[in-house]
Image (cartoon, rainbow, N blue to C red; front, side, top):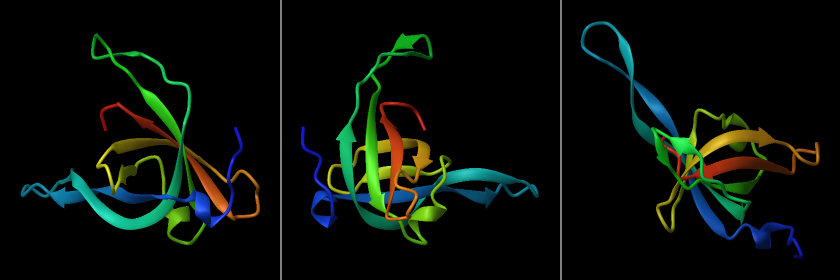
Length: 117
């Protein structure tokens, strides 16, 4: 399979979200709902899936390699964030982030669909 490169291969629109922290009224901070941070063009390439046991049930998990351009915004992303496909609404958990060419052109994120966030 030929891998396209350049801006033409970034055909998806991905919304990156981070979990908010809100006060609980008793002086403590608790995690709140996810909040949108920004939208970036991206490329989603499926990887070989698996079926792990989660919560005593066999669950289908589909990993993807999500590629985005490296920028000051995208370099803030951590595995605590999540990605949502703006077109389809599918949610992906971020597992790992790498700079494959070490020239800060693109970032590759290993994301997983089908796991609880």
